[in-house]
Figure: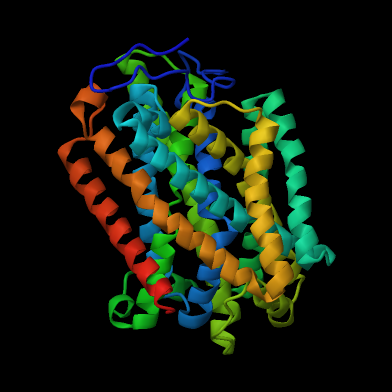
Length: 443
């Protein structure tokens, strides 16, 4: 059943977002805070996966090995910015009943919406490329599988995603949480083995003047911030919060926004721990031992056990494999949401997943096969650049819609949130433009 046309929108809204899972998880009308939070818990962890994917690992490794703990402050600021933008995605989905893709289709003229859809699909394919390469590297490090074959093996996760979607949305969330716990456990063990200086960690969380005056630190800071917020996460979150069957009254929506935001912030704190742990382990294991040029994942794997002992390299590779596999699950959902939201086209889940995965596997196999396995880092960097190009096209409309009273009603952003949100939006766009210019200039 299509949604009735609402004031402030050009279109009527079409079908609900993710119709097979829409309002499928019951939220208790009465109960304690914890019971209601558990009912809403899950979507935030699916979103948090995008903030700890393999595409972020190389940047955090480089930051820790070159500058110690100094750039921990940048990781913290990036995480706070992510919390703000994901909160806005939650508000849009719950207040309007539209995901971000549907909102763009119902606001912009058709040619504009189709342009946004095309570049968003390219960004999702680029993100999937990072997950393919990351998973393939994990398989190679753990089992000696050649990278090309590792990329091909990742196509088998189509069957896993299809099985989970058939059993129910909660199964997808449970698997994602288990993989996040695996990653967190591995890095907790890495922290124990590396024994970072807690005083230096605390100092690193305070922004230092060198972040601006040192060109090397500034560039890595731009990379961390510019690649932190994944555009597909905004589409994803605005959709999957609608899998909960909350009261559709103003009171019910306010409560849903509150609990969904708590879920999101808790999950993003886990993501912050993972990213901070990668950087701290690199600082303790490499920076303090004089290994200041560790930027590739394979180099970190080879050095960890000789430096730390205790099977540190195996833990590192296991966390990488879990990270890559986790991100592929959420990429499937994001691709489905974007296609159905922008152009109202539905494909069978296995077919949609297979198309997305092939768009990532083919360039990965070609580049690795032709230029060799040494190009994996370049592939990861390239995927982040493509994501950067699309980010402004997702963040700008998100701020535009949630700041419009005609669209949001009583849930419109208050003045302080509009000012903060636009400042973050402009900062992200400027940083991503600079990142693109630097990459184009060969820096």
